Every structure is written in C-alpha cells, then in structure tokens.
Amino acid sequence: MPDLALLITTVLTGGRALTGPPPAQVLDPVPHADPVRAGVAGVPGLLDDLEDDTRNVVLTLARVWTTLATGEIRPKDAADWALTRLPPEHRPVLEHARELYLTRRYAEGGWSDELRARVRPHADAVLAEIDRLPHR
Image (tube, rainbow, N blue to C red; front, side, top):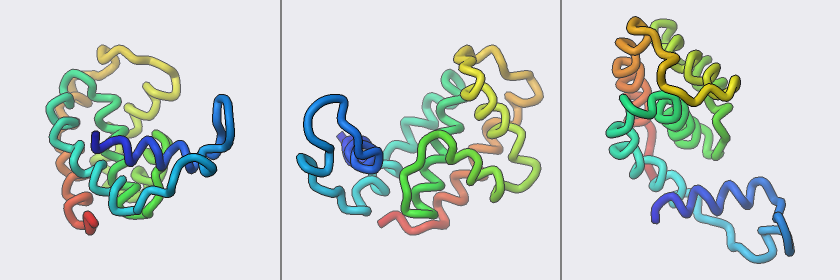
C-alpha cells in the first residue's frame, strides 16, 4: 500500500483525530522519502485513468509535482502552486480541473473538445517537471 505513507503524513499534518488522542501521539513520523516514492509510484495508475477521471488525475499530478518540489504534501490546492509554474499554454487544463473541484462538479462532461485535446499535453508537461526532480 504505497499510498499509506501519503495518508499517514496527511493525518499527521492535520493533527486532528475524529476521536481519541492526536495522531502524533499514536503514529510515528513518516520518512520524507516514503510519501515521495508513493506519489511517484502512483503516476502510472493515474495515467491509466486520465481519460475517465480527468479532473482528479490532473489535480493529483499537480500534488505529486508540488510534493516533490516543496517537500510538503498539500491538498488539491496544490493546483495554485503549480499554475504559477506552468507555461501559459498548459494552465487552462489545470484551471478547469480546479474549477470543477471547487464547484463540486464531479461529472467528466464538463470538458470541451478543445480542452480535452489539451489534457494529454498538459499531463506530459507536468510529468516532465516531475521527472526533473529528485525522487528520493
């Protein structure tokens, strides 16, 4: 379960329990390399879902990139960080995915043909950024 490192790190970062003691009292910190490795390991599976779950895959790729670049695991607002670093031609896909998320529109029907044609080039651009960063 590679994503367990991501989940535990997220719980520890939030610091709140639904019930019982704070997470830091019962969970050890996760070595930084583990969530990084988990994020990168999940990329092939994400790409398999790019066409059917575009919004979530685009936002998750932004989170993986953000985690590798900053060392922080951030929620889907990692899109804000990534948008400032993407070339202008790749921003519309991430902007649209973020908007779908913020407006709680889960259906994949919200993608125009023009925007849909830009999804794979956007993903390739983010993957190139991920590949440039250390994966330790």
